[in-house]
Length: 363
Image 1 (cartoon, rainbow, N blue to C red):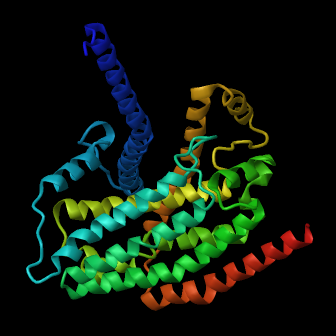
Image 2: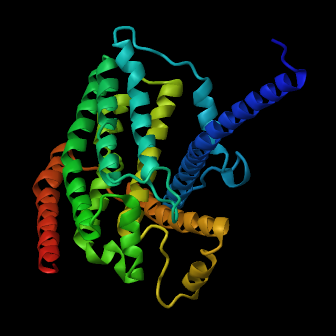
């Protein structure tokens, strides 16, 4: 059987074309993920720089100023330093738990970014259980902290891990009840549907006005979930040296550092999505809102405007949480648990009952 040379060339070119299509398909799938990871990395660096500048302003001192213009590269320099430092492992600790703990904390938080709608139809994964995915995934992070504390073979680390687990359980229940109230108002658990439900009625349709009690409870609970002052009991320096991260150094310590800011960012994003209408900017008496509504109709530029609006609202709450860190004193452990179980839980339950009743009567 004789095969013509041109036929062989046609077959080879066909297979090359098919392989190129497969490569382009893989790149098309990975491109949004890489874009999200790059955006998250830049956001974390920006948050670290902002926290240092804001804390310097509150304490009336000079913040970072030498690494780059206005010290913007200081966080990058610190991260590079941690990357090249030696990673020490306790001789009598559980090596596997010690190594796995930081990774679990970071990965569980990064997965939550999949369901965040940064703009209209600009979300990596529009799931029907979007908000519950965040709650369920974020509850895995304290397991990583507990593993780190136990694997360190250090009493301070273990106490920090236990505190992280107790704090997460205490404040996750009020947080979930507030999310349930929002889901009842929107008739959906999808983050995209929740944003769309708020955008129908403009500025006064934001859940901030319809759920003011839930908003306050959600804000306090999210601060406690992020282990920020006044709720940073798991890593209280005066009591536990550095809590669950006492024995860590190098890149593993850097992962904990990144995880705390990732958690803070995702909490602020969910405050924006659930209570502030996401990328909706229909604020009355402001001409700029009309300008944004007009320009949002133009493709890529409209998506960029959506992302800008979402991040502007997010960084407003980041500013509030950073300011709270340098103005409020730390609670005791019993005060922290009492606040969660005796105050926030009954209030969030009452809020859910009121929301359910109002929805029933409106049928």
